[in-house]
Length: 158
Image (cartoon, rainbow, N blue to C red):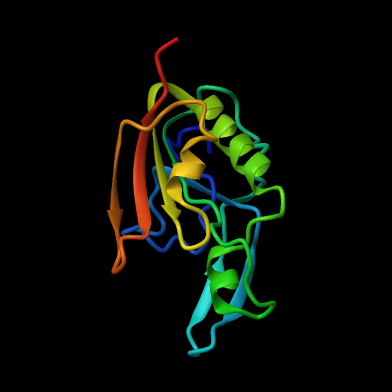
């Protein structure tokens, strides 16, 4: 996996990837599981590597691009399809996300780019931005109610 230039550190089912087997990327998630959703669709979370985004098993300065799409729900029913699809934040979500941002910047190469996706159904994006050691350069809300935000960060050169 050392020849990969992109890290997706919370890949889930790789929903937003055009090529879910993109050979440039290493797909990481804390979960490896399959589910049948309430509408009968099959959901498969099958990362290349099972690992925690708070403690990534990669050397510093390893990737040109990091994608960080962490769970964004604070609560969900025990069998809720959204929890299965997107994951659920722990009670210590602030510390978890702060560690996630730190890890993302640690494994980014100098001048590398972090693409961050956040849905603010439960927590506003402005609260999440405070957890990053680096401010975003730009971003854009999307979705039917503009609750999903895409933000772009850059790691400064050493």
